[in-house]
Length: 503
Ligand code: AHR
Image (cartoon, rainbow, N blue to C red; front, side, top):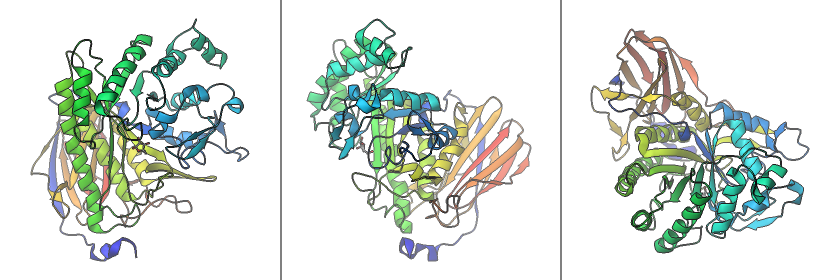
């Protein structure tokens, strides 16, 4: 029996109603394409056995990547890709990953206990980004690398011509610069990136930032935050980096938002463990607001330091090192949708969001097993919420207070995000209750036309898509009752509902 028997207690109680009014916003905030980011690295079967084709398996390929996987990522509107890690980055030397793949050196990457053949390097990263029309976000090696190695990578990628490295790029098949704008100075220097103290890292950052910007002053720098532990690290680093003479203030601060605790396994959880995953997300949300406030106090003049939440997942105990494989059930799709809503609601305090690790590990959008590929419930959550990209975030007034759920009543039962773009309104709603269907009445300022509703849910919240049963959890079209400026629809328990209309 899965889930400690909580399904026996499951029942639908009397339907509650929620009244919402959507209004033009007081302050302009756009749902940025950079919230649709993917972070992955070479661990487990993310690359080998995932994105990359195996020789002779008959898959159509683009630069060694499986076209079916690429097309699935493209269809979900991934618009940012963060590479090469992760912990991987602090053991990675970019020069190993250029030139003829057969001639590239093989190295051991201790963090993920993997022999790296370097066949997926800079040109392949960029081919991936260009295929997806995504922005590349590169992480330089601070742990075992050097300032010169980081500077040289920027020269190789961004310098037009006339230097040894820009000419080498051309000889390697790329005439025009790659124009990589986003550069992170290390991954987690306080942890597997070298166990650095705040003072030591701050000096490293200043040195890297100075020479990286000297190479290309148009780049945006990302400084890693500890976010949770070691406590006080972020404030200390920001103090040392952002104050004083010619302070190299970063454009972004990197946040890795993982949580777990008593959440059960990825596929086997009780009702209270189900809710604990959402309580964890609420705590992450509070910490994001606290960190955004801290960044504001260190931002100077025109420059606002913004949060790059470039790794996130609910990390279950069954995701073991080094493969980090975990299941992805309907619960994870609700988590993903809510995370997207929460960071979007933070407006320009958050610049980027990347799901970790996207393929075959942690919060997977796609599972690849041999020739088979299946799209997870989280994939469909992303697909639905991608409708928000580019839209202006609307203000939402609720008739009553949003009610709360979970054993500690610390979780919002329903979260809502509305955007509008070129006369089209998009409203995503996430109901995490295990027992309550909720009726939502939405009012808008202008009459709605062509209303469409789609719902992602399933009979059992443990449901997932697996090879052999790939379509168990997928969005279905539903009817909405529309009367000019008001629409009414039902949010079933544990569901994501997307309402779109022309206004
Ligand atoms: O995603 C797995 C690891 O978690 C990443 O490599 C690291 O940045 C984080 O601690």
